Amino acid sequence: PEGWAAQPAKPLFQNASDMSWLFSSHSKSPTALEAISPSLSQKQLDLAKMLVDLGQAHLFDTWSKPDADAVERFFSKVEQLDNSYPGGVSAYVRNAQQLLADSKAGVNPLEGWTPSIPAGETLEYGSDAFNHYEDLGAAELAAVGFVLVAGGLGERLGFSGIKVALPTQVTTDETYLSLYVRSILAVQKRVLVLSGKEVKLPLAIMVSDDTAARTEELLKANDYYGLSAEQVTMMKQEKVACLINNEAHLAIDPKDKFNLLTKPHGHGDVHFLLHSTGTLGRWQEAGLRWVYFMQDTNALVMKVLPACLGVSKALSLQVNSVCVPRAAGESIGGLMALKHKKGSEMTVNVEYNQIDALLKATIEPKGDVAGDDGMSPWPGSINQLLFALEPYAAQLTKSQGKMPEFVNPKYTDGSKTAFKAPTRLECMMQDYPKSLPSTAKVGFCTVKGGLTFSPVKNNLIEARKKSDAGAPTHSAASGEADFYASACEALAKCGVAIPSAPEDIRHRARGNASCRSARARVT
Image 1 (tube, rainbow, N blue to C red):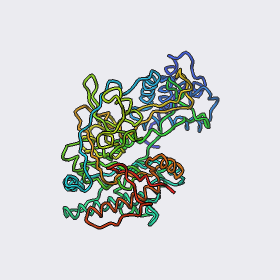
Image 2 (cartoon, rainbow, N blue to C red):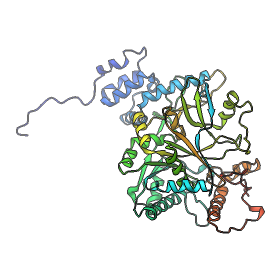
Image 3 (cartoon, one colour):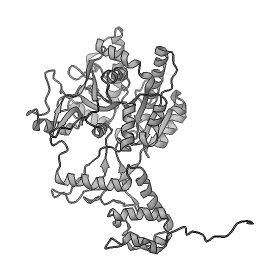
Image 4 (cartoon, helix red, strand yellow):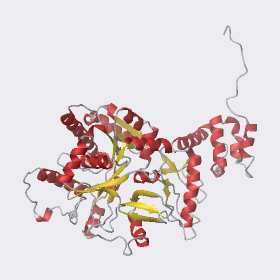
């Protein structure tokens, strides 16, 4: 065009000579990768160098004159993994190498720690103390953002859809998602009654590849159940690369040599997503002060929110674990205040299969036994969490959302040199306090004498086995029964005369403080 001077075009791709830096420090060059280097973009070259530097040259061993689409597919997957993990693939591999080395060496993560009862409150449902904290927390309801962890399918339950589409009960077939949203709307109405102020409280939903489209479809088909679309944030969890050995070599997808095998990273990703999507920042700008985490199938999740909010406010807790009374030896984690022999402290969930050994090695030779009231002294952790927003957002900004991780490889034998199947790093949402300084205020609120936790996670066959063993069934049947029983409890505390159920169907609570599902036999 007139007035324009022609200039030599800059090459779109690097030429083969640019690959010298890629293989100079390696005795064996991935010749297939070297051969296609002229067609690689700068971004692809950078990713290739990263992989080779990390000792992942084996990923290119089977390449033989790959077509452009296959190469693009491979590097797109690597780039996606690099973008969805704090610190990228390099950090993932380095973390994996350390954790795998610790696993092979048999390192005990609880070595040197001594437990004690953490700070918190145990309240009797409907008592004066409960009502006091409930009134205190009700004043904070206008400043709560809700987070729903909803990345799972109902296949384990014999249900083909997403778990939040399961019915809470069969009288109306209302789904869990509908119940949760309706509960948020009820909180908004309560705020209006208490303060005369109209609020729109936000809901962030963590979804996965399996649930994202169906969750969005369910919301849109029901007009968001009464929420405005702007109140809902969808956050999709990505997977992480699988590992094939103790050197943390990444696994190739057996169905596609130009793809990497991946698996879910765990529900701890919810913290990274809240940070990386800017959700927490927006909530802070809107004046919110609290974040309440909900699991996908506990219909009773809102029952104790106001009281737990009151406890968080009164005790200035940064992290409040909403807990339940725990039976000794029960398959549920226990919240413990841990102090290390070198002086550091933290209050965290200890997994149920670690509690007995930790207690025997430290303060209780008998291990995980009941106290004077017939229950374990350790509050039962149920992954129902209440965070103070400001320190939470600040910590995630500092850590970029990275969570403490663990690895659980299945070895072929006692030498721990080979895996039965590829493994991966995992993280859990309840491990967030492990990332906090010792000065952080972490505690609990347990409500006894009432039903507050009744998840639906076992199919009827498994539920019958648990019922025969005298354990909570955590099934659709018990979840529905507890939903009705919980309503009766609330009405009774308000002075309504509730007739007793016949003995053969009566909800038999555990001990003197059941707040979990019935032991009622599933038939």
